[in-house]
View 1 (spheres, rainbow, N blue to C red):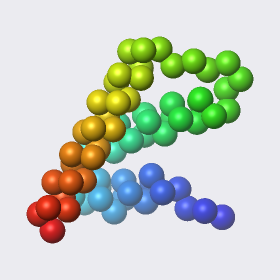
View 2: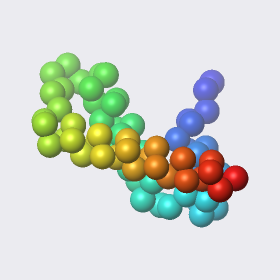
View 3: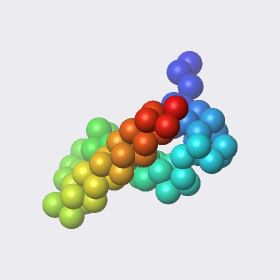
View 4: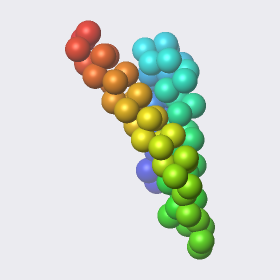
Length: 71
């Protein structure tokens, strides 16, 4: 059985303050919306939701880039 990657990330990186809690929350929201779009029969994201998730993706990449540049 595959481990929940997001749970592992939160345990190892968010709970230990390597990344901010906001990052964990945003990733959880991304995962929930992705699952809805995969499994709900008639899920359609609004333009506002798409823009919010785009901003979240940018935030995640910025945080990871910052971490990699420091280490």
